Length: 257
Image (cartoon, rainbow, N blue to C red):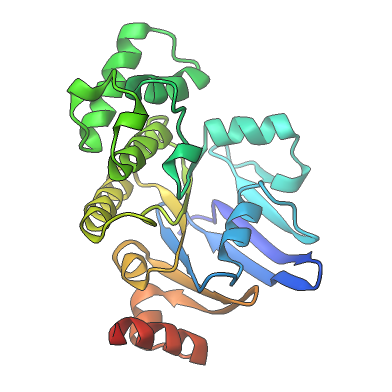
């Protein structure tokens, strides 16, 4: 196996008296999906924001190895370099798709904007790629000129995924990508994400409180509580034979639901 695409160690962060991250370490390898699970307030979203450069830790490092093999410390990069990284090698899928879409721009324009940010200029090629990606995420190509506000929540989330993946990022952060959606819509979206991840060979880090979603998508799981990683390992091993009492409680509560 090649080295990790993202490697973090010794991450600590306090918000006043609250220890949001407590000596957290994580490695993410090319082509694998890692889920961070835990109840609200466990630190999982804070960890994702820290790994993606949106939140600076009090201590610790987050190292990213680019396609050229060069490893950089995210916190030492300039703001412009981090923004460029988020446009090219990285992608971010927000829980609320409105945070990841331009609501005043058409569906095709949302996808096209991302392509233009990496240098695409030919209108015909951009529109063709937008149609291909709308179809790929199961949005009818006839909606290419429709505004996102006319879409359902599930369609908006699929559009955000198309906008994020059109540039073929190497690493994608997903924050509760199925949160707030109906159960039937969640299932279809999870199937779509799983198919796209396999097709594109993405590395994905996603935050979820949904154990079923983690089991479906993730190769590995990190279980967080009070800012600490209390258990981690291969998904089936962690969920079928949890060792930590907190993980046992999470799994049992799902089975009892």
